[in-house]
Image 1 (cartoon, one colour):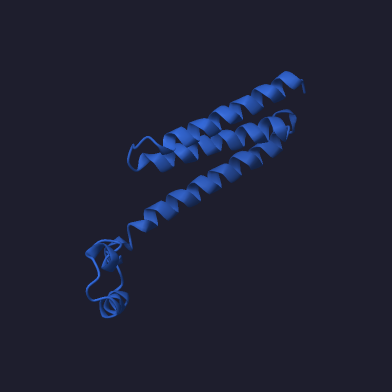
Image 2: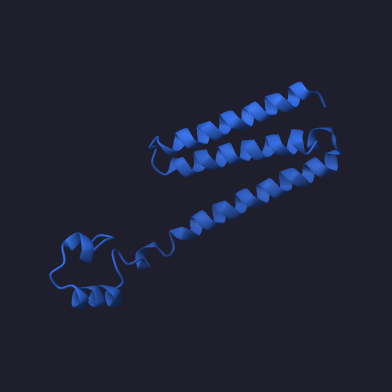
Length: 119
């Protein structure tokens, strides 16, 4: 493989890393995680194709690479779907026992100290 391909791939990985950091400062709501994961998949693909020489290897190895990426995406999708199932049970703020202890230890503490995670 020529040094130009390696340098180009390395520069692309650096640009994608800077892009990942830049996306962190842009608020697009819930899509931030999907954008970051998408960039990570592109970076992993570049590493696998060029640095691990998968581009010039047998197609069977490429099939395994694509299948493993698909399995990870499927696992993330199932995990994301499952998070809505327990959302009604999440206690906002402190757990009742912990809040009782905080109230007993510091009854005159400011609200921000007594309720650090909201009320």
